Length: 108
Image (tube, rainbow, N blue to C red; front, side, top):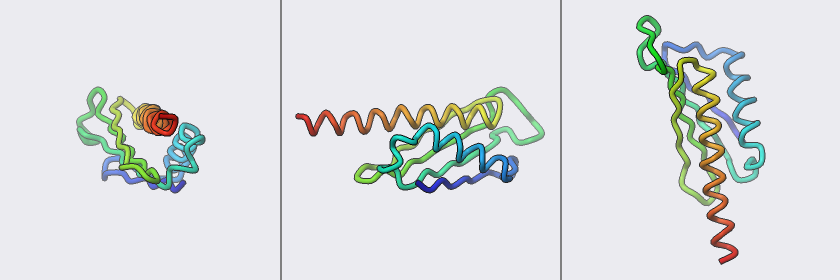
């Protein structure tokens, strides 16, 4: 599973951020690694670095899943890590839902 991290100009994309995203996403999606080919992570500070504000950090994750349409989730939080954690949890639940339905159809 390839994990690609993109940030806007208000969030610095350094090695620590890359490692945090990769560890968090891989941990949340480990059981789906055979079905998920790529996860794109987009991080942004919606109010800009100078204006601050509650829950202004946004993390959008898009998982490319074999045989299914991409699954996209978004999370807002007051910190970048909080937004990443929230999006990873949402994506895990979304994939649970997708693969749960697929199993139900096969059992028919």
